[in-house]
Length: 232
Image 1 (cartoon, helix red, strand yellow):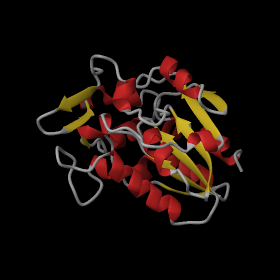
Image 2: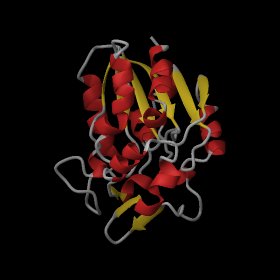
Image 3: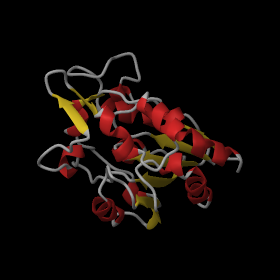
Image 4: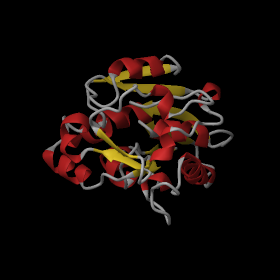
């Protein structure tokens, strides 16, 4: 079994965000990987008006999924759930989908489908430049309030501007109706409202609640590893 982790919006370096959970999984004999997302500038084109968007992210994750026959659990975090939902379609190695404080879309839905009328204060949108990102001064209190200070500082260094078009681009098809699906609700999350998470969780086969903020794989990596190891 291997785990493929798809990171959320407005950050880079999925391997770093996932590394505490990856280590906990390695201790259980489970390998994992975190693909790069082109829309976050993790490729040969910068994020922006003409930059890569959701289709490129889906293609990047699908390439990793299709590159191995090993039974695979796909973990989508926040925006990464939208990517994972489409990228896993038709990939025979995928055995289970896990959505962590994540958007869980139907075909035709996008980030904008779930957004409020007014942008949240912790996100900054630059329509002229074609990007959006997390407001640095609000990052700690919104997204990682339950994480150790060293991880908070390192996470802040990995914030990234992302192509704004991903907020409007819908998924064309989704894998979760045809695969076992677990939703992890983060009950102390200040980024994705708990009520919204529980509504998304209604689409999953199994729901687990953790008393964490937006990044449980940083604040409670052993708990996340326990959930994933139990999916064997």
